[in-house]
Length: 207
Figure: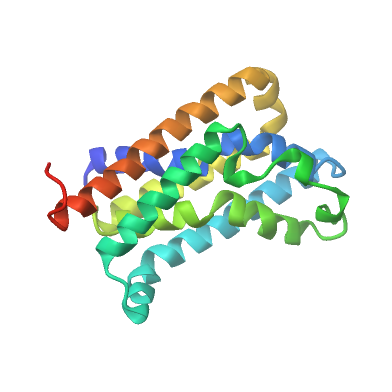
């Protein structure tokens, strides 16, 4: 277990989770709930995302082997997907989800657990980009380091959602956009590295 590996992996995972950019969406989706209910929804989404992340870390390789996909092919596809996600994040809101696309039909006040599951836990927190990153990192660092990094990133993301009102007031709209674009830059850098590493392994590029 390496402290440097944990820190670097944490930054990468936190960047693709991008909880800062999720704050406006979380606010719209939970606008009809009390502050206590909003916290419960954030906790539920965090717990579900964490459970899914741990599952991906442990069985991701088995799924790839079962469907006959090599790590190199998966890393290349994942790099392209992460790059698209980063470009999407630069647009202001992650995963192509716009506040204008959200209507009351997506906000079932009587079923907060469903809201915590979909769309908050997945695909907004744990989407295809995050899954790709976790599976790829599982081949680059040891299991304990990855579990520590991913658990820390998801829990901190959940705490940010729980404190969304305070964070919005602290950062303001411009601050949220600035940090989101910084996260997008990190994700884009990771994506390019994944693509380059695969091309090097296939002897289509040089280090």
